[in-house]
Length: 229
Image 1 (cartoon, rainbow, N blue to C red):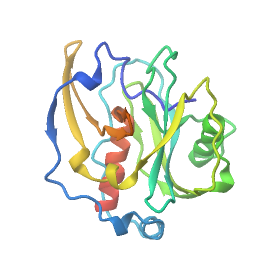
Image 2 (image 1 turned 90 degrees about the vertical axis):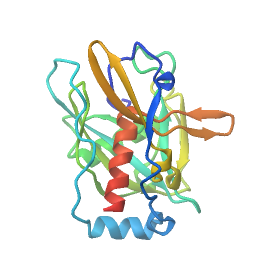
Image 3 (image 1 turned 90 degrees about the horizontal axis):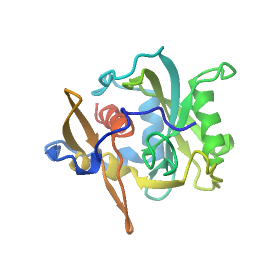
Image 4 (image 1 turned 180 degrees about the vertical axis):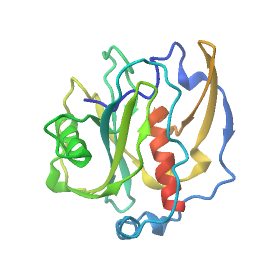
C-alpha cells in the first residue's frame, strides 16, 4: 500500500500552482547533524520541540485509520532519503511521490512493524538492512489517515525489488537538500471554496524533476524542525 493520500485527487496540476513563499530565511541543518551517528544521538536524546504541520483540512467523511510510513535515510557518503513514485495507472494520486508505507493491519504489532512490512511489500526492502531510530508525531491527512513517520537508517547494501502494482519507481534525494528550507516552497490554491496551502520540495534528478509535495513534504518539514530544535 502506498502512502495515505495527502489531498483530494486534485482537479489542478499542483506543479502549476504559484509559489507564494520560499523559506530562504531559515537555516539549513548542518551537514554534520545529518550523519548517521548524529541522527542516532538525536533520537537517543530528543529535544523539546513541536511539529510545524500536524493536520490537513478535512475533505472526506470516513472513520479515522492508523497508518505508518518509512522515512528511511540511506547511509551513503552523502546521506539520502528513499522515496517512491506511484504508477501512472493508479485511480488516485497517480504519479505522486511518497514514502513507502500504508495502513496498519491488525497483524502489525506496532507502527514500526507496519512501516517495515509495507516497505518490504512495496520495494522489497528487507528488515535486516534497516535500523529504526524512532518516530515523529502523527501527521493527519485530509482523508483521516493518522500517519506515523518511522525514521530509520538504511544500509547502502540494500537491494530493491519493486512491486509494480503499487510503485513505479524508487529513488533517493539527498537529505541535505530536503533539510535546507531554501528548497521548501509554499503554494496556495482555492479549491471548492476552500483555500489550501501546501509545501513542495522539487528536486532535479538528472533529466527528471521529482516533485515532492503534500503529506510527504509536510512530514519532511517536521523532520527538519526536529533536527533544528
